[in-house]
Image (cartoon, rainbow, N blue to C red; front, side, top):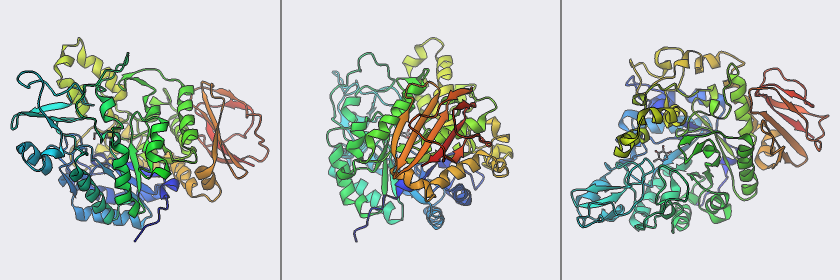
Length: 569
Ligand code: NOJ
C-alpha cells in the first residue's frame, strides 16, 4: 500500500539523544535504552515531537557507535532489541517519533562483511569495500594521497592480501563501496528492516561521501589549511550520489511516511537543493554546516567571528530554500562544542538570558529545530585540563601521528585548541540532578566526565523552578503547536533587518497578514534598538522573551542578551 508523505517534520521539534551519555539504567556507567525509557515522560513534558537517536547498534565503539558491526541489533551495553521495541512503543504512545542514525558510508572493521572482505581477494564480499594495491616498487605507499577526516592517510595496509583499504574516518571504519549494487541492496534492506519496526526516519551520517570517484590524487585547496581535506573533490557529492539517493527514496523511503536529514558538511545552498528539492525525491532535509564553521579556520583553529556573518548565513539559507525545500535549525549536536559561550561570548551571571536568546534566534526561522540533550537546561563546555581527559577518536588519532609529535609544544597547542573545539564537550554526562555523577549513573564513575557545574545546572533543579530554562524551552517548543503561531513558523516569509548591525539579529516572519518580529541582542551589553520603520507596532502581542520581566515594544535600549518575539498585525 502506498503511503502518503505528510511531511510531519515541518511541524516537529527534534531532540537529539547521544545514548552513551544520556542515562544509565543498570549501573554500568554507560547510558542505555532503558535509561532512555525512564526519561520519556521528561521528553514528553518538554514537548518535543521527535527524537534523533545517535547510533545504538552493535559496535566495538572505535567512534562511539559510528562504527557498526551489526545493523540489525542493539549494542550490548545499551540493551536488547526487546528494550528498543519497548522504547519506540513508549515514544509513539507519547506522540514522539523516532529518527535513527543511518551510518552507511562505512561499517566497523568488525562487521562480518569486512571480515569476509579482508580474508581473500576472491571472497564474494571483497567488492563491498575499496581495496587497492599500494604505490612504489613494493606497494608500501598508500594508493593515493587522500587523508582521513580524523588525520593521516585514508588508507590502511592489510597483511592478509597485501592490499590497502579505504577509510575516510578511523581505520576501524572502512568505507563501503556503493558502486557495488549488492551494497546498495543491503542498505535498502537495512532501511526497510527499521522502517518495518516502526522508525519514522533517518539521520544519514556523512551522506555526501557515499559515491567516490576512486583513485585520483586529491589536490590541497589553494591557500587553505584543513586537517583533513585532501581528496575531498573526489568523494564529496561524488559522481553517482544523486542517482543512489533517488533510487533509495523511490524503492524504500517513499513507501513510508518517513523523513530523512542528511549530514552534509560543506554543502552550499545549490548543492543542498540538489539533495532536498522536493521534486527531486532524494533526501527531505540536510544539516548544513556554514554557521558551524564561522569560528574556526579549516574547521580546527579557533578564530573570532562576527554577527553580520552569522546573520548572512542564516538569511541565505532561509531565502535559498524557501518554497522549495526545508531547513534544519541547530546550534548543537554531538560533534559540536556547546553553543553557550561559543555564540554568546562570556555571559557571566546571565546564563538563562543568553541561552534563551540563542534559542529564540533559531527557533523562529523556517525549518525543523533540533535540541541537543542538555541544551534545554543550558549545559556548557567542560573545563578540560588535559588531553588525557578527552575520549574523542579524533583527538587520539591526532596525538598518535608522528608528525604531530614532532611539533614543539604539541600537546599544549592541541589542548588550547580542543578546549574550544572538542566534540567531547557535547558528550559529557547528562546532568539530571545534584547527586553523584549528576544522577546519570549509580556506578562509582560514569564512562566519561561530568561537568563540575552539575550541582547548579541539572534537570531536577530546572523542573523545580518555574522560571527555569527548561520551562522557557517548553513554552518555545509549544509554539509549534499553537494555532496562530505555528502556521507563521511553517509558511511565513523571512525578512532580515539591519544586516550589518554588529550586536543585533532582527528578522520578521510574515504569513497571511500576520507578522512575527524577532529581535535578539547577541551581546552581554546594553544595545539601543529602533523598531524598523515599516513595522507598525501599536497592536503588538508578546510571544516569548529571554527576560522574565518584559518591557513594552518600542524604541529603547535592549538589556544584555535581551531577545523577544512580538506578534503584530
Ligand atoms: C559524523 C558523525 O556525526 C560523527 O560523530 C562521526 O565521527 C563521523 N560522522 C563518522 O561516522
